[in-house]
Length: 483
Image 1 (cartoon, rainbow, N blue to C red):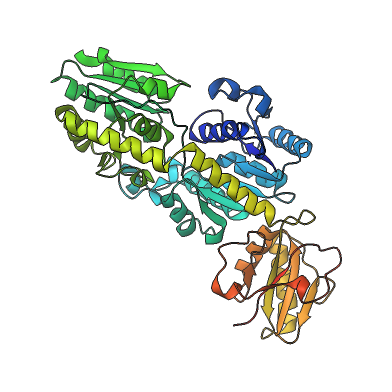
Image 2 (image 1 turned 90 degrees about the horizontal axis):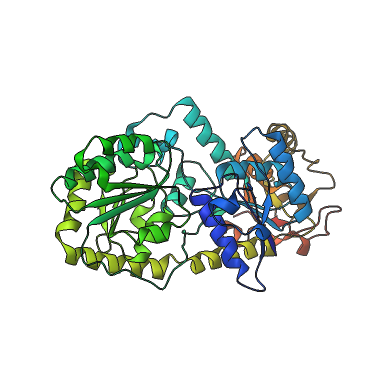
């Protein structure tokens, strides 16, 4: 099985996870053949070996030359699956490969401009999405509904995709993020150095962390803060630090590729973000045995609870200060939380578990796809609908959906008088699903996934067992029986 992992960004959680998956799979002989298609700078920013990279740069959603470069590489590589790991990559893969091979998308997060629909508390909850934010989220939702399968890195994101973006439940698979585990584990005996790691984007609330630390540092002369990363808010954080006497105890490391090694220099980790999904930096800190303070946003609650960390409301600097002071003043609690955090990550969030679940999903999709017709579904139309209305309605809605439908009574339809069902067949399952959703009297049988089948579909049979195969339409055509 050949898999292409597609990226259009060279740093951040999506790039880190995709490269980690590729590196881990490279150590398993006989496993999937994985190639990363993405920016050439991936070699420098995340340490991807050149032998695993097919360079292609897509600078924007309207970068025609970038789309052509990706399309050319996909034709050369001829993968069985294209797996996009960021939102722009999802759009690119759907446009250039959606009709030729299965396309998967990992939905890593929601843009800050539309986060009010995602987060349940904090400053972003009450922020009204602007036109740009709403349009961006709408486009991401459209892509998520059109790809073969959307992967959610947390259960919270899976629920969001189904509830807010209306992605069909059987097209969503929850595969939680995982990290490479090291045998070393830190024994925390006291908290004097805090650390955070991130992009310094406004949603990371790094200025609030700096201000809170400086207030604590005024009463504790030996406290230090390590700020790992780079981004828009870094100059603001540096200015805040320069204005205080204790500002020299705030260290800015800049962008680093060795985040776990940097975290080993700390005694505790702080995640003050206003918008997160399931952050890898938090998992890395927990795996090292650091006690963690994190905001209750996104999928963070699925990682941390009262037994292995401290959860605080997002955007609440008083709660952040109290939580950091708690770890400073109670070394035994800090040590206990760190050990419990390490144990949880090693049991539930290892990279090996994450890789195994990805491979299982890829095998399920490839195993249920006919090589000659990789995307096909069947739609059962009850004959209670008048024939003329059925025929005209299908043709009219097909033009809206942007796909060509054959005559329901021609070579691409079959009628079973014993069941009273007209079975219509057409390749391109995402287009047919879009068409089917516009007809409230049509149910879609998703035989290309072969899972999450509702009760009414469990009685469906492969059409090739019931009637003669339809010319030029190979593959499995499922048929729905009337209840």
